[in-house]
Amino acid sequence: MKQHEVISKTSTKSRKRRGRGYGSGLGTYAGKGLKGQNSRSGGGVSLYFQGGQLPLTKSLPKLRGFNNRFRIEYTELNIDSIAHLPSDVMIDPDYLLNERIISNTRKPIKVLGRGTIDHPIKVKAHKFSHSAKSKIISAGGTAEGIQN
Image (cartoon, rainbow, N blue to C red; front, side, top):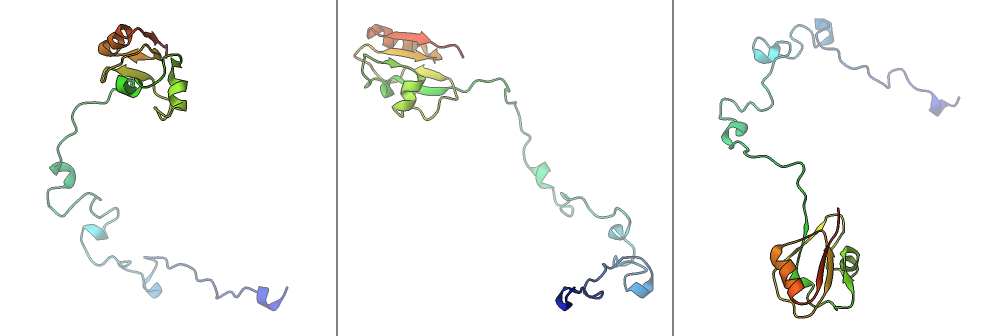
């Protein structure tokens, strides 16, 4: 053991224990003052108490409605975003991801009918709107469904 490794007994102070006699300096009222709500055990106001002012939680409107836990969120894909693609390839989620038309394939894809198409294309998607399916078929293409 070397001199710099010796730990002095006075180098670490023990913590002040409140309410343990007046000799400690924190006896009698233990730093809580005299009577009142805050001097009692378990005393004090709740965290959301604002001093008699109307609380924020009461001044905001109630949240109405509900969120369906079982809803399916689709990636929406309009015809105008796939109309420029060639007619000799099968347009499926992997192809759309490679062409960077969609950003991921985690959500199922629904093809919507905005835009026009003038050449036949083969599309595989999870869902089609009625107008999108009729536009693809009227152009001479095919619209196949994919099971989830």
